[in-house]
Image 1 (cartoon, helix red, strand yellow):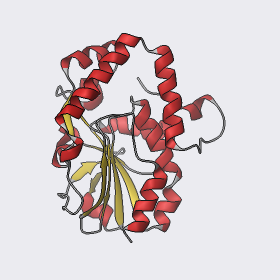
Image 2 (cartoon, one colour):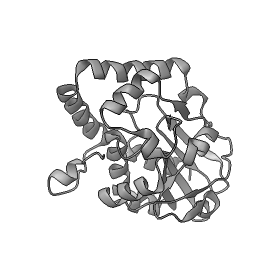
Image 3 (cartoon, helix red, strand yellow):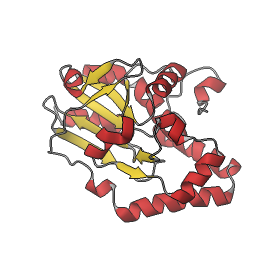
Image 4 (cartoon, helix red, strand yellow):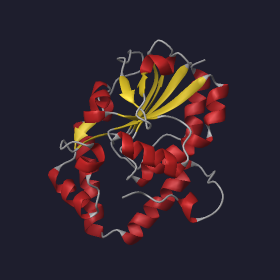
Length: 230
């Protein structure tokens, strides 16, 4: 089970804005996914918005708790290790099975040189297992660490975790999105997608989250936010 990126189906790298890439993927979903399935996902998003999860995430100005997770190679990586290199751009994603997570990660991968010029590093956190993170990094040729957040413990600290509702679990099972296998537990918990910028001391300089997993900040906006934080 994986999302096959557009890059795999043709030569070249996609330098379009993320919104254009997402619009194309939404168009494919609208064309090929049954309307009743689309309605279930829309209902799940609407219920999350009613809970106002994105309004209650770890806010700008607060300090993130230190964490230690395994990366895609099973190596232990701490937030202190990452912050020792400079400011940290931290993306919380759902997993390699999500086409919008894949699109975001491929887009962020392209701005790594600009992030380095801004003295910042990039890392992604998801509840998927180390093995799934390895597959994702290898398949999509990502050049930053993918950290396995077992049980969404770090996502919970950032106020991002939620349990997939039963009616959506049924759809995922039909689509072979086996979260208990992918994440290595039976919780059916995911993070709402979010992007943070942390200062060297762990202070939150920028925070963006959305209950709608089809909406993510543009890499260019992250670069602009880094410059504004300098």
